[in-house]
Length: 448
Ligand code: GLC
Image (cartoon, protein in one colour):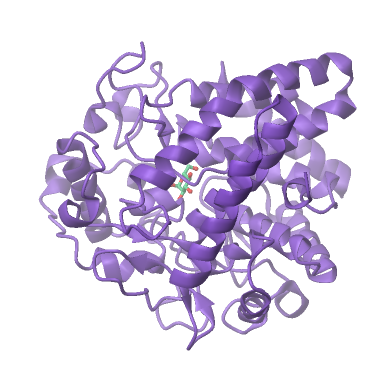
Protein backbone atom coordinates (compact mmCIF):
# COMPACT_ATOMS: atom_id res chain seq x y z
CA UNK A 1 0.00 0.00 0.00
CA UNK A 2 2.70 2.48 0.85
CA UNK A 3 4.47 2.28 -2.53
CA UNK A 4 1.16 2.91 -4.34
CA UNK A 5 0.35 5.84 -2.13
CA UNK A 6 3.84 7.29 -2.44
CA UNK A 7 3.71 7.11 -6.24
CA UNK A 8 0.22 8.55 -6.55
CA UNK A 9 1.12 11.40 -4.18
CA UNK A 10 4.28 12.22 -6.13
CA UNK A 11 2.30 12.21 -9.35
CA UNK A 12 -0.33 14.65 -7.97
CA UNK A 13 2.53 16.99 -7.09
CA UNK A 14 3.92 16.67 -10.61
CA UNK A 15 0.54 17.41 -12.17
CA UNK A 16 -0.08 20.49 -10.01
CA UNK A 17 3.30 22.14 -10.60
CA UNK A 18 3.05 25.22 -12.84
CA UNK A 19 6.32 26.79 -13.90
CA UNK A 20 7.61 28.17 -10.56
CA UNK A 21 4.86 27.28 -8.07
CA UNK A 22 2.34 24.65 -7.03
CA UNK A 23 -1.41 25.16 -7.36
CA UNK A 24 -3.64 23.49 -4.73
CA UNK A 25 -5.83 22.06 -7.49
CA UNK A 26 -5.79 22.87 -11.20
CA UNK A 27 -9.52 23.41 -11.62
CA UNK A 28 -10.73 24.88 -8.32
CA UNK A 29 -7.66 26.82 -7.18
CA UNK A 30 -5.51 27.82 -10.17
CA UNK A 31 -3.12 30.22 -8.32
CA UNK A 32 -0.67 29.86 -5.42
CA UNK A 33 -2.02 29.78 -1.85
CA UNK A 34 0.03 30.70 1.18
CA UNK A 35 -0.45 28.01 3.83
CA UNK A 36 -0.88 25.40 1.10
CA UNK A 37 2.70 26.22 0.04
CA UNK A 38 3.93 25.36 3.54
CA UNK A 39 2.15 21.97 3.66
CA UNK A 40 3.27 21.29 0.09
CA UNK A 41 6.93 22.07 0.83
CA UNK A 42 6.85 19.57 3.71
CA UNK A 43 6.05 16.81 1.21
CA UNK A 44 8.07 18.06 -1.75
CA UNK A 45 11.10 17.95 0.53
CA UNK A 46 11.18 14.17 -0.03
CA UNK A 47 10.74 14.04 -3.78
CA UNK A 48 11.93 17.38 -5.14
CA UNK A 49 13.62 19.70 -2.64
CA UNK A 50 14.51 22.21 -5.35
CA UNK A 51 10.82 22.67 -6.06
CA UNK A 52 10.03 22.89 -2.35
CA UNK A 53 12.40 25.87 -2.08
CA UNK A 54 11.19 27.35 -5.36
CA UNK A 55 7.57 27.25 -4.19
CA UNK A 56 8.35 28.94 -0.86
CA UNK A 57 10.48 31.47 -2.67
CA UNK A 58 7.75 32.30 -5.20
CA UNK A 59 5.43 33.00 -2.30
CA UNK A 60 7.88 35.21 -0.38
CA UNK A 61 8.82 37.12 -3.53
CA UNK A 62 5.27 38.44 -3.30
CA UNK A 63 5.65 39.55 0.34
CA UNK A 64 4.40 43.08 0.94
CA UNK A 65 6.77 45.82 2.20
CA UNK A 66 4.92 45.73 5.55
CA UNK A 67 5.84 42.04 5.94
CA UNK A 68 2.49 40.47 5.15
CA UNK A 69 2.64 37.36 3.02
CA UNK A 70 -0.44 37.36 0.79
CA UNK A 71 -2.89 34.51 1.04
CA UNK A 72 -3.00 34.14 -2.74
CA UNK A 73 -0.28 35.01 -5.26
CA UNK A 74 -1.98 35.37 -8.63
CA UNK A 75 -0.58 33.64 -11.68
CA UNK A 76 -0.54 36.31 -14.42
CA UNK A 77 -1.13 33.59 -17.04
CA UNK A 78 -4.47 32.55 -15.50
CA UNK A 79 -7.43 34.52 -16.86
CA UNK A 80 -9.47 36.74 -14.50
CA UNK A 81 -12.60 34.66 -15.18
CA UNK A 82 -10.88 31.41 -14.15
CA UNK A 83 -10.99 32.30 -10.44
CA UNK A 84 -13.25 34.47 -8.33
CA UNK A 85 -12.51 36.68 -6.43
CA UNK A 86 -9.58 37.26 -8.78
CA UNK A 87 -6.88 39.94 -9.14
CA UNK A 88 -9.29 42.65 -10.36
CA UNK A 89 -11.56 42.26 -7.36
CA UNK A 90 -8.71 42.57 -4.85
CA UNK A 91 -7.18 45.43 -6.84
CA UNK A 92 -3.92 45.42 -4.89
CA UNK A 93 -1.58 48.26 -5.95
CA UNK A 94 1.96 47.68 -7.26
CA UNK A 95 4.62 47.19 -4.60
CA UNK A 96 8.29 46.25 -4.32
CA UNK A 97 8.82 46.20 -8.09
CA UNK A 98 5.90 43.85 -8.65
CA UNK A 99 3.02 44.83 -10.91
CA UNK A 100 -0.40 45.80 -9.52
CA UNK A 101 -2.99 43.08 -8.95
CA UNK A 102 -0.39 40.43 -8.21
CA UNK A 103 -1.81 39.17 -4.93
CA UNK A 104 -4.52 39.51 -2.31
CA UNK A 105 -4.14 41.66 0.81
CA UNK A 106 -5.15 38.96 3.32
CA UNK A 107 -2.83 36.48 5.02
CA UNK A 108 -3.05 32.82 6.08
CA UNK A 109 -1.53 30.88 9.01
CA UNK A 110 2.26 31.34 8.89
CA UNK A 111 3.36 27.72 8.82
CA UNK A 112 6.25 28.53 6.47
CA UNK A 113 9.02 28.68 9.08
CA UNK A 114 8.04 25.20 10.28
CA UNK A 115 8.08 23.99 6.66
CA UNK A 116 11.37 25.70 5.79
CA UNK A 117 13.07 24.17 8.79
CA UNK A 118 11.85 20.67 7.84
CA UNK A 119 12.91 21.06 4.19
CA UNK A 120 16.32 22.24 5.37
CA UNK A 121 16.69 19.34 7.78
CA UNK A 122 15.83 16.76 5.14
CA UNK A 123 18.25 18.28 2.64
CA UNK A 124 21.16 16.72 4.49
CA UNK A 125 20.03 13.27 3.35
CA UNK A 126 19.94 14.36 -0.32
CA UNK A 127 23.71 14.94 -0.60
CA UNK A 128 26.16 17.85 -0.39
CA UNK A 129 24.81 19.92 -3.30
CA UNK A 130 21.33 19.78 -1.86
CA UNK A 131 22.56 20.71 1.61
CA UNK A 132 24.41 23.70 0.15
CA UNK A 133 21.31 24.86 -1.71
CA UNK A 134 19.31 24.49 1.51
CA UNK A 135 21.74 26.69 3.42
CA UNK A 136 21.45 29.43 0.81
CA UNK A 137 17.68 29.25 0.67
CA UNK A 138 17.33 29.32 4.42
CA UNK A 139 19.51 32.46 4.61
CA UNK A 140 17.34 34.15 1.99
CA UNK A 141 14.15 33.20 3.77
CA UNK A 142 15.12 34.01 7.36
CA UNK A 143 14.68 37.84 7.32
CA UNK A 144 11.48 37.41 5.33
CA UNK A 145 10.05 34.92 7.83
CA UNK A 146 10.94 37.35 10.61
CA UNK A 147 9.18 40.20 8.80
CA UNK A 148 6.10 37.99 8.36
CA UNK A 149 6.03 37.30 12.11
CA UNK A 150 6.54 40.96 12.95
CA UNK A 151 3.64 41.97 10.75
CA UNK A 152 1.36 39.45 12.49
CA UNK A 153 2.48 40.04 16.05
CA UNK A 154 2.59 43.85 15.83
CA UNK A 155 0.22 45.22 13.21
CA UNK A 156 -2.34 42.49 13.71
CA UNK A 157 -2.46 42.62 17.49
CA UNK A 158 -5.80 44.41 17.26
CA UNK A 159 -6.90 43.24 20.71
CA UNK A 160 -3.66 44.43 22.34
CA UNK A 161 -3.30 41.12 24.21
CA UNK A 162 -0.36 39.60 22.36
CA UNK A 163 -2.38 37.62 19.80
CA UNK A 164 -2.72 38.14 16.05
CA UNK A 165 -6.24 38.87 14.81
CA UNK A 166 -7.67 37.68 11.54
CA UNK A 167 -9.78 40.17 9.60
CA UNK A 168 -11.53 37.63 7.38
CA UNK A 169 -12.50 33.96 7.86
CA UNK A 170 -10.36 33.11 4.81
CA UNK A 171 -7.29 34.14 6.80
CA UNK A 172 -7.80 31.21 9.16
CA UNK A 173 -7.61 28.70 6.31
CA UNK A 174 -10.83 27.20 7.77
CA UNK A 175 -13.10 29.31 5.61
CA UNK A 176 -16.69 28.58 6.68
CA UNK A 177 -15.96 27.01 10.07
CA UNK A 178 -18.72 27.48 12.67
CA UNK A 179 -15.94 29.12 14.69
CA UNK A 180 -16.79 32.37 12.82
CA UNK A 181 -20.58 32.15 12.92
CA UNK A 182 -21.11 34.40 15.93
CA UNK A 183 -18.73 37.09 14.69
CA UNK A 184 -20.03 36.78 11.11
CA UNK A 185 -23.63 37.25 12.25
CA UNK A 186 -22.66 40.84 13.06
CA UNK A 187 -21.18 41.45 9.58
CA UNK A 188 -23.65 42.97 7.09
CA UNK A 189 -24.51 40.46 4.34
CA UNK A 190 -25.46 42.27 1.13
CA UNK A 191 -26.82 39.60 -1.23
CA UNK A 192 -26.83 42.29 -3.95
CA UNK A 193 -23.05 41.80 -4.12
CA UNK A 194 -23.68 38.37 -5.65
CA UNK A 195 -25.56 40.04 -8.50
CA UNK A 196 -22.64 42.36 -9.16
CA UNK A 197 -20.02 39.63 -8.77
CA UNK A 198 -20.59 36.04 -9.82
CA UNK A 199 -19.29 33.14 -7.71
CA UNK A 200 -17.20 30.78 -9.76
CA UNK A 201 -16.77 28.08 -7.13
CA UNK A 202 -20.33 26.87 -7.81
CA UNK A 203 -19.47 26.23 -11.47
CA UNK A 204 -16.69 23.82 -10.53
CA UNK A 205 -18.00 22.37 -7.24
CA UNK A 206 -21.30 21.17 -5.80
CA UNK A 207 -23.27 23.94 -4.01
CA UNK A 208 -24.07 21.59 -1.10
CA UNK A 209 -20.34 21.36 -0.33
CA UNK A 210 -19.60 25.07 -0.43
CA UNK A 211 -20.29 28.12 1.73
CA UNK A 212 -23.82 29.52 1.39
CA UNK A 213 -24.67 32.68 -0.58
CA UNK A 214 -25.16 34.68 2.62
CA UNK A 215 -21.70 33.59 3.85
CA UNK A 216 -20.27 34.51 0.49
CA UNK A 217 -21.90 37.96 0.44
CA UNK A 218 -20.33 38.62 3.84
CA UNK A 219 -16.94 37.37 2.63
CA UNK A 220 -17.06 39.77 -0.29
CA UNK A 221 -18.27 42.69 1.83
CA UNK A 222 -15.39 42.18 4.27
CA UNK A 223 -12.84 42.19 1.45
CA UNK A 224 -14.33 45.34 -0.04
CA UNK A 225 -14.22 47.09 3.36
CA UNK A 226 -10.59 46.14 3.98
CA UNK A 227 -9.61 46.97 0.39
CA UNK A 228 -11.29 50.37 0.45
CA UNK A 229 -9.33 51.19 3.61
CA UNK A 230 -6.13 50.50 1.64
CA UNK A 231 -5.63 47.17 3.45
CA UNK A 232 -4.45 49.22 6.43
CA UNK A 233 -4.46 47.70 9.90
CA UNK A 234 -4.67 50.76 12.16
CA UNK A 235 -7.61 50.66 14.60
CA UNK A 236 -8.98 47.46 13.16
CA UNK A 237 -11.15 46.73 16.17
CA UNK A 238 -12.95 50.06 15.72
CA UNK A 239 -13.12 50.18 11.92
CA UNK A 240 -13.42 46.63 10.64
CA UNK A 241 -16.49 44.40 10.92
CA UNK A 242 -14.68 41.11 11.61
CA UNK A 243 -11.70 40.96 14.00
CA UNK A 244 -11.17 37.56 15.60
CA UNK A 245 -8.41 35.68 17.44
CA UNK A 246 -8.20 32.07 16.29
CA UNK A 247 -6.52 29.43 18.49
CA UNK A 248 -5.13 27.53 15.54
CA UNK A 249 -3.82 30.60 13.68
CA UNK A 250 -2.05 31.80 16.83
CA UNK A 251 -0.71 28.35 17.70
CA UNK A 252 0.89 28.34 14.25
CA UNK A 253 2.34 31.84 14.86
CA UNK A 254 3.96 30.48 18.04
CA UNK A 255 5.13 27.26 16.34
CA UNK A 256 6.74 29.45 13.68
CA UNK A 257 8.72 31.26 16.38
CA UNK A 258 9.93 27.90 17.67
CA UNK A 259 11.03 26.92 14.17
CA UNK A 260 12.78 30.31 13.89
CA UNK A 261 14.80 29.46 17.01
CA UNK A 262 16.40 26.66 14.98
CA UNK A 263 16.59 28.62 11.74
CA UNK A 264 18.25 31.59 13.47
CA UNK A 265 20.87 29.29 14.97
CA UNK A 266 21.53 27.73 11.54
CA UNK A 267 22.00 31.08 9.75
CA UNK A 268 24.04 32.70 12.52
CA UNK A 269 21.31 34.96 13.95
CA UNK A 270 20.15 35.29 17.54
CA UNK A 271 17.56 32.65 18.50
CA UNK A 272 16.65 34.13 21.89
CA UNK A 273 14.07 36.69 20.73
CA UNK A 274 12.17 33.90 18.96
CA UNK A 275 12.15 31.73 22.03
CA UNK A 276 10.77 34.60 24.10
CA UNK A 277 8.08 35.38 21.58
CA UNK A 278 6.99 31.77 21.35
CA UNK A 279 6.58 31.70 25.11
CA UNK A 280 4.63 34.97 25.18
CA UNK A 281 2.23 33.87 22.44
CA UNK A 282 1.71 30.49 24.10
CA UNK A 283 0.84 32.27 27.35
CA UNK A 284 -1.56 34.63 25.56
CA UNK A 285 -3.35 31.71 23.86
CA UNK A 286 -3.57 29.87 27.14
CA UNK A 287 -4.91 32.92 28.98
CA UNK A 288 -7.29 34.45 26.42
CA UNK A 289 -8.63 31.63 24.24
CA UNK A 290 -9.29 28.93 26.82
CA UNK A 291 -12.66 28.54 28.46
CA UNK A 292 -12.39 26.94 31.89
CA UNK A 293 -16.02 25.98 32.17
CA UNK A 294 -15.96 23.76 29.06
CA UNK A 295 -12.20 23.06 29.08
CA UNK A 296 -11.89 24.03 25.40
CA UNK A 297 -9.98 26.50 23.23
CA UNK A 298 -12.24 28.63 21.08
CA UNK A 299 -11.96 31.72 18.88
CA UNK A 300 -12.53 35.16 20.43
CA UNK A 301 -14.36 38.06 18.82
CA UNK A 302 -12.13 41.04 19.61
CA UNK A 303 -14.98 43.51 19.08
CA UNK A 304 -17.16 41.94 21.78
CA UNK A 305 -14.51 40.11 23.83
CA UNK A 306 -16.69 36.98 23.70
CA UNK A 307 -15.49 33.44 22.92
CA UNK A 308 -17.37 31.66 20.14
CA UNK A 309 -19.65 28.90 21.49
CA UNK A 310 -18.69 26.54 18.63
CA UNK A 311 -16.30 23.69 19.37
CA UNK A 312 -14.22 23.34 16.22
CA UNK A 313 -11.03 21.62 15.18
CA UNK A 314 -9.09 24.89 15.52
CA UNK A 315 -9.46 24.44 19.30
CA UNK A 316 -7.32 21.28 19.15
CA UNK A 317 -4.36 22.85 17.36
CA UNK A 318 -2.73 24.59 20.39
CA UNK A 319 -1.54 21.05 21.21
CA UNK A 320 1.36 21.94 18.89
CA UNK A 321 2.89 24.08 21.63
CA UNK A 322 5.39 22.41 23.95
CA UNK A 323 4.91 25.00 26.73
CA UNK A 324 1.14 24.70 26.96
CA UNK A 325 0.12 24.01 30.59
CA UNK A 326 -0.40 20.32 31.28
CA UNK A 327 -4.09 20.65 32.26
CA UNK A 328 -4.83 22.33 28.91
CA UNK A 329 -2.90 19.64 27.02
CA UNK A 330 -5.01 17.01 28.76
CA UNK A 331 -8.18 18.97 28.05
CA UNK A 332 -7.39 19.00 24.31
CA UNK A 333 -6.75 15.26 24.31
CA UNK A 334 -10.00 14.67 26.19
CA UNK A 335 -11.94 16.84 23.72
CA UNK A 336 -10.33 15.03 20.76
CA UNK A 337 -11.21 11.62 22.22
CA UNK A 338 -14.78 12.63 23.15
CA UNK A 339 -17.78 11.82 20.90
CA UNK A 340 -17.58 15.45 19.68
CA UNK A 341 -14.53 14.57 17.57
CA UNK A 342 -13.45 10.99 18.23
CA UNK A 343 -10.00 9.46 17.79
CA UNK A 344 -9.33 6.72 15.21
CA UNK A 345 -9.32 4.07 17.93
CA UNK A 346 -13.11 4.45 18.14
CA UNK A 347 -14.07 5.97 14.79
CA UNK A 348 -11.45 4.41 12.50
CA UNK A 349 -11.07 7.88 10.96
CA UNK A 350 -9.09 11.09 11.49
CA UNK A 351 -10.96 13.85 13.40
CA UNK A 352 -13.67 15.93 11.69
CA UNK A 353 -13.52 19.72 11.39
CA UNK A 354 -16.47 20.33 13.72
CA UNK A 355 -18.26 18.85 16.74
CA UNK A 356 -20.09 15.71 15.51
CA UNK A 357 -22.76 16.14 18.20
CA UNK A 358 -23.65 19.74 17.22
CA UNK A 359 -27.11 20.08 15.63
CA UNK A 360 -25.63 21.91 12.63
CA UNK A 361 -22.80 19.41 12.02
CA UNK A 362 -22.77 19.08 8.23
CA UNK A 363 -21.08 16.08 6.64
CA UNK A 364 -20.50 17.82 3.31
CA UNK A 365 -20.07 21.52 3.77
CA UNK A 366 -16.36 22.13 3.78
CA UNK A 367 -15.12 23.16 7.26
CA UNK A 368 -18.45 22.44 8.99
CA UNK A 369 -17.91 18.70 9.42
CA UNK A 370 -15.70 17.00 6.81
CA UNK A 371 -12.27 15.59 7.62
CA UNK A 372 -9.24 17.56 6.40
CA UNK A 373 -5.77 16.03 6.32
CA UNK A 374 -3.83 19.21 7.11
CA UNK A 375 -5.43 19.89 10.50
CA UNK A 376 -5.12 16.22 11.42
CA UNK A 377 -1.47 16.42 10.47
CA UNK A 378 -1.09 19.37 12.88
CA UNK A 379 -2.94 17.48 15.61
CA UNK A 380 -0.67 14.47 15.16
CA UNK A 381 2.39 16.71 15.50
CA UNK A 382 0.91 18.03 18.73
CA UNK A 383 0.41 14.50 20.04
CA UNK A 384 4.06 13.74 19.33
CA UNK A 385 5.19 16.96 21.03
CA UNK A 386 3.39 15.92 24.22
CA UNK A 387 4.38 12.27 24.21
CA UNK A 388 1.07 10.73 23.05
CA UNK A 389 2.92 8.32 20.79
CA UNK A 390 0.23 5.65 20.47
CA UNK A 391 -2.49 8.16 19.63
CA UNK A 392 -0.17 9.85 17.12
CA UNK A 393 0.60 6.55 15.45
CA UNK A 394 -3.10 5.64 15.26
CA UNK A 395 -3.85 9.00 13.70
CA UNK A 396 -1.00 8.62 11.21
CA UNK A 397 -2.27 5.18 10.19
CA UNK A 398 -5.86 6.43 9.93
CA UNK A 399 -4.81 9.28 7.61
CA UNK A 400 -2.67 7.05 5.42
CA UNK A 401 -5.46 4.45 5.21
CA UNK A 402 -8.08 7.06 4.36
CA UNK A 403 -6.08 8.66 1.56
CA UNK A 404 -5.04 5.28 0.20
CA UNK A 405 -8.66 4.13 0.10
CA UNK A 406 -10.32 7.33 -1.11
CA UNK A 407 -7.62 9.22 -3.03
CA UNK A 408 -5.84 12.56 -2.64
CA UNK A 409 -9.05 14.50 -2.10
CA UNK A 410 -9.40 17.99 -0.70
CA UNK A 411 -11.56 16.72 2.21
CA UNK A 412 -13.48 13.60 3.25
CA UNK A 413 -16.94 12.59 4.45
CA UNK A 414 -16.68 12.28 8.25
CA UNK A 415 -18.87 9.12 8.42
CA UNK A 416 -17.99 7.17 5.29
CA UNK A 417 -14.52 8.56 4.49
CA UNK A 418 -15.56 9.18 0.86
CA UNK A 419 -13.48 11.83 -0.90
CA UNK A 420 -15.12 15.24 -1.48
CA UNK A 421 -14.05 18.43 -3.29
CA UNK A 422 -11.01 18.55 -5.55
CA UNK A 423 -9.79 14.98 -6.32
CA UNK A 424 -6.09 15.73 -6.79
CA UNK A 425 -5.36 18.16 -4.01
CA UNK A 426 -1.75 19.13 -3.41
CA UNK A 427 -1.55 19.31 0.38
CA UNK A 428 -3.27 15.93 0.82
CA UNK A 429 -0.66 14.41 -1.50
CA UNK A 430 2.27 16.26 0.07
CA UNK A 431 1.32 15.38 3.62
CA UNK A 432 0.78 11.75 2.64
CA UNK A 433 4.44 11.64 1.67
CA UNK A 434 5.42 13.05 5.04
CA UNK A 435 3.14 10.64 6.89
CA UNK A 436 4.69 7.70 5.04
CA UNK A 437 8.25 8.87 5.59
CA UNK A 438 8.51 10.43 9.02
CA UNK A 439 7.54 9.07 12.39
CA UNK A 440 9.87 11.19 14.48
CA UNK A 441 9.04 13.89 17.00
CA UNK A 442 8.75 17.29 15.24
CA UNK A 443 12.15 18.94 15.02
CA UNK A 444 10.93 22.38 16.02
CA UNK A 445 9.74 21.10 19.37
CA UNK A 446 13.18 19.84 20.36
CA UNK A 447 15.70 22.09 22.05
CA UNK A 448 18.02 23.99 19.62
C1 GLC B 1 -9.82 26.82 0.69
C2 GLC B 1 -9.37 26.35 2.06
C3 GLC B 1 -8.04 27.00 2.44
C4 GLC B 1 -7.02 26.73 1.33
C5 GLC B 1 -7.56 27.12 -0.06
C6 GLC B 1 -6.66 26.66 -1.20
O1 GLC B 1 -10.06 28.18 0.68
O2 GLC B 1 -10.32 26.61 3.03
O3 GLC B 1 -7.56 26.53 3.65
O4 GLC B 1 -5.83 27.39 1.59
O5 GLC B 1 -8.83 26.55 -0.26
O6 GLC B 1 -6.44 25.29 -1.12
